[in-house]
Length: 68
Image (tube, rainbow, N blue to C red; front, side):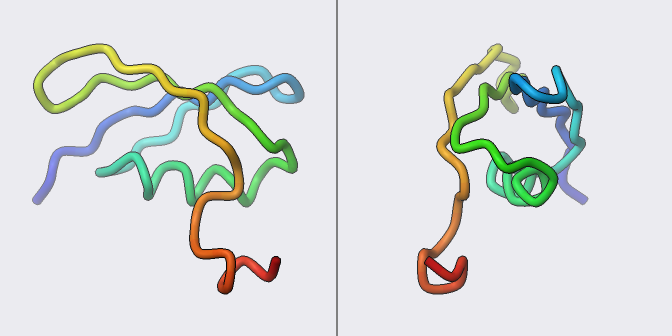
């Protein structure tokens, strides 16, 4: 089984929330249903042990499936 990693999402409304998932995309998809913001800051530790950060635009996914 793949290693689960912790992703820390920091937004203006709720502060910070930690989600455990096996990949960045799965973590973002599970988080984006909980907030209505357009952008969120994400921190996590990669498989190689590097500390990673990213500003992620929400929603993530195919526009056709998201109903835009």
